[in-house]
Length: 287
Image (cartoon, rainbow, N blue to C red):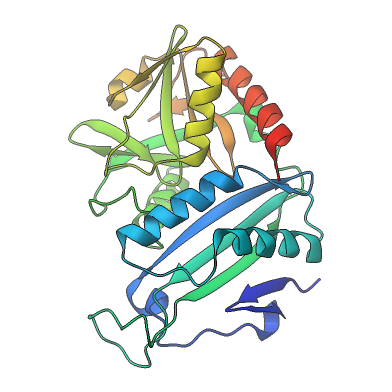
């Protein structure tokens, strides 16, 4: 079935969607994005994604072509039009197409932002088989730019990291800077020692994950101890458990790092419980 997508105010068949070759998202990676999960036909944590989108736009001095209320309705219409029960809605806003290539930002008064949304159908998203067995990761150097807190479309190195992981026969990579884990290629990283969950503190060097914020809130409500600090890859290998969070993976166990089993080498009790809590609470609050 041909998907219905959204481009600059119009709902179109994906085969008819077009963007200018001069769009700065294409030429300069001058854009931001968000991915919102859909469960039971409803949006998960939309408010958090909308708030982070506004922050990303502000940090880049980029205008939003729609209000957040309008954006919610666009998401809902795409979910309805494409019959999404479980899946994702991808949103991208760029600085637009000024009509030629130039490093200098165009005047927003004459060059409107470009906005694109599309859905991805992912049946079984919440009941992922990988959540039962866990992920294997490798550590790689983190050589990305310094503003990883802005959710930009500059995803070349994360893509390269995923390909390094694939070549190594594992599922993903954790990025390491100055000896400490920053995050995964497209997710936040955690370890567990006893009942204590350890994850890197917020700053410019990691993405301020929406799922991260929700999971830590739920963990505190469940009387789990949270320690927000950097940890090394060696510390992670000696942890009782490890996991990642993201909008599409939710809470996903990590059972091996650089060929070393984490804990028993199977998804641990804390991780399993957090995934259960997150899915239950997020479904309850979905819009």
